Image 1 (cartoon, rainbow, N blue to C red):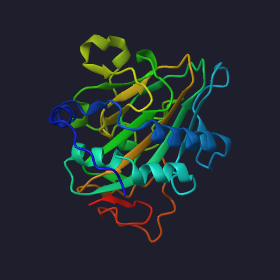
Image 2: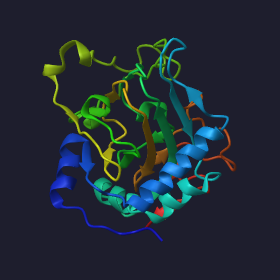
Image 3: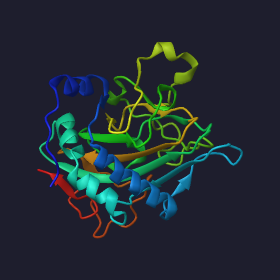
Image 4: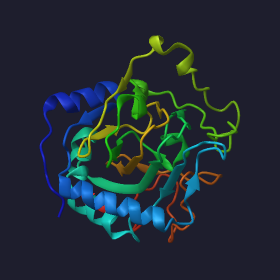
Length: 268
C-alpha cells in the first residue's frame, strides 16, 4: 500500500501557478536505494524501447528507457509503495491516480547532450488537464545539470513536438500547433525555475510545462513516473506516440478513461 503524506498548501498553490515544484526529501534513503538498484538493473538489461539520445561524438552518453515497471520489480515496488502517488493526487486535485508510464534517464559523466526545451503531453496518447510527472535523481544534481521549467506554460498552448536530434515533426503535422519559442535566445524573457537536487528530492511538473536540461559533468541517474488524474482520457493518435502503446489489448476507444491493466489504479 502506498504511503500517504500531506503536502503544505504552498506547494499545491505553487504547482497550480507555475506547473512545477520541488518536494524536498520526498523519499527515504531506502526508497532511493530501491530506485537506484532498479536503474542499474535497467541499464544492464535495457528493454526494446531503450534509446541513446546523445550523439556518437559526445564524450558521455544519454540513455533512456520506458515502461519497465512490470519487469523491473524495484520500479514496481516504488510506484506502488512510496508516497509518489499521494503527492501526485494532491498536486492534480484528483480523487484518483493512475500510472501512465515510467521513464529512466541516465546521463553518464561528461555528457554534453542537452535535453531540448519541450512539452511532454503532445508526445503522449493523453487528453485532459489532470496529470503530473515526477522526476527524482539518485545522484546529486547541481543547478547547471538539473531540469528547468518555464513557469506558467502548463496553461498552454500545446506546442509542436519535434524529434530531439533532427527537429522533425513526426507527431502532429507541420503547422497544426504553434512552434516552440527559442528559450535560450532570451532566457531573461521567461520565468525559469530549477533546483539543485539531492537524492530523496523530487520535482513534480505538469505534462504541458516547458522543460529542458543541460548536459552533466557527473553521472546523473534519474527516474520519472507519469501519473494521470480524474479527467485524463485516452487519445487515439494516427501516429506512434512516444513512448508507444501498440500493445493496448483490448484497445481503448478515443476519449475513454484509462481503465486498463496497462494503466493501473494507484489511488482512489
